[in-house]
Image (cartoon, rainbow, N blue to C red; front, side, top):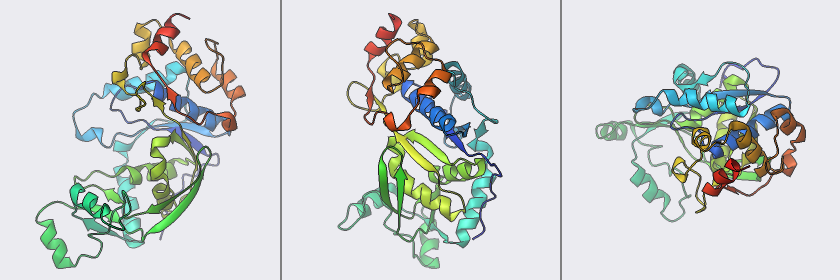
Length: 318
């Protein structure tokens, strides 16, 4: 199989890739800060990519992405190269599909989510894995099923098992099922787009929330299939609310705008994030250069950080 064109970059890169669905909250900003620290600490470039494939298909506020970039800059994060938007890279994803269609191959899938869930829950079904229902349909069966619903496109992964070593989580092994490349509404799937973009941009270090750890074997497999270099991974613990769930905007003052309304500026937010990572004392002013000098990946906390509304109140009084 011919590979995707290499980026041509000598120096690798890390990245932060938000989806412009809402303003960044302190959990997102903490992950962005870690991605920047990992990249700069290792001598890599730091890139920002807007992952807007889904939001381009629904009503959304185009100003959200601009505010996200403004918040990253306000926190002190600077990036190299122009910001990339997935919605402008559709041909790259189609080129990757053409490569995969030749080796190992792709096939249309007409299954509903309910059908997949029921098959996966049957005896010997792998939890969350596609059971291969449409893999070997005959041409006549495909034509019959196509009359009922549009097809998604899946890759033939042949049940590969992939092992990666995460810098924080350690060894992670997973079965690579026949995952979706293009959904039945025509949108390219996350697992395809993120891999193609990382190859094209020379990203060889991926730092992101540990909720995405289960998708890593699929992406590592696809990277290799497309002729790319599998990145190093560091999946960082999430920020949780008081109930132990992933932090969200509904959890009080959690964005820079929310905190600014309480008199808490970006420098104070950076200080609190640094404190949560063991890189600063409570209330200590910490410029980005100081954080980078103190940064040690091996000393990062391995447990989630819990954010409560009292955090905002505490910062506003310091």
